[in-house]
Length: 121
Length: 110
Image (tube, rainbow over all chains, first blue to last red; front, side, top):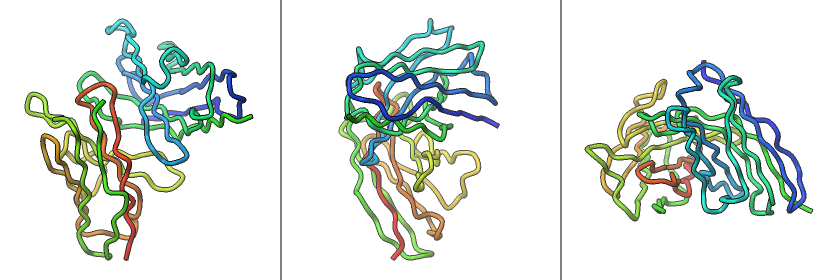
């Protein structure tokens, strides 16, 4: 059974940092392309970042709204993916979901339960 | 970025057909596939994949759900609608980076 479990969310002040973790199991993590997708309080879904597999040189991609502030990374030995969020803004307030695709299936078949990040003073 | 447009809400009666539309501002077809996918989200839950590549039923999804379309126009059909289908439905394209989502259609029962 595929499992994705996000942790690390919480209340943080604008300008501060937070690091999210997604621990996975039930699939071959080393071959997977991992993503973060967030959902605003208005329920809009927004893709945030992607990291490809080692065979793709761990290439990373970001939404324009977070480029330069967020960093996605992975640890294949722990089957985990991370999202380092710096210089947080109030508009980053959202539920952050971890999702997975592969080279041949680029739809989001599996999602974690999400972790809530609230940016507020 | 590719923009996906959905109607905000739809109300149907139990046992009737629900048709949810999604229109894109760019063609999402590529080499014979339409890179359009559909998700269902119930309150307090994560999105759940229903349909991938426009018309393929995801694992474990009842045959009451179906998808069709190509190019820039896509539909998700639920027939017949059951009470458990009340949820918000999102379309998503993966033709281009960044992947983008529609605003969601909230399905309610009359």
